[in-house]
Length: 168
Image (cartoon, rainbow, N blue to C red):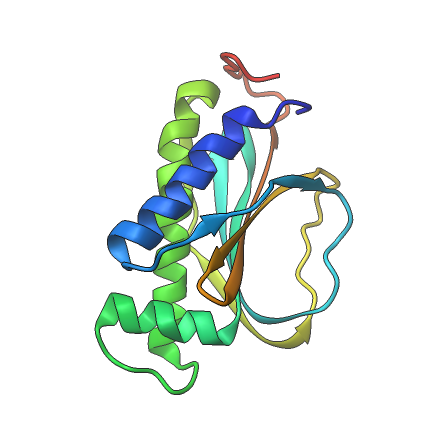
């Protein structure tokens, strides 16, 4: 997938829509880039949502614990001093909304896709990687002083007929 425009625009739009409409948190997109290697150790949260159909892959949402608490406060209208089950659930729901909105637009290019149940990982100094050897498209954002990333990895599902209208 040399030309990521068919991924970047809908993914960026999905993230901005959720942050600005659902959370009332302004976000500024950064420059998207491809990443093949596993990311280095991180701190914070990562929520992963699987996608499957004639194409398969994942979308992930990565943020700091501070931004996760801010997301939960905006979504659930309550303050959060620590990362608890409510914060983890809020981050899972935000990832589900963003990846779900992206999936709906991507289906116009890729055909029908299903979504998995979000999985959230929280901790310090952890590495999350996919067993797939595919590239990830990384879309960085800035929400106030906090940074977050949306990552998308999609590859054709071998043996399944697929649609690719305008994707290169």
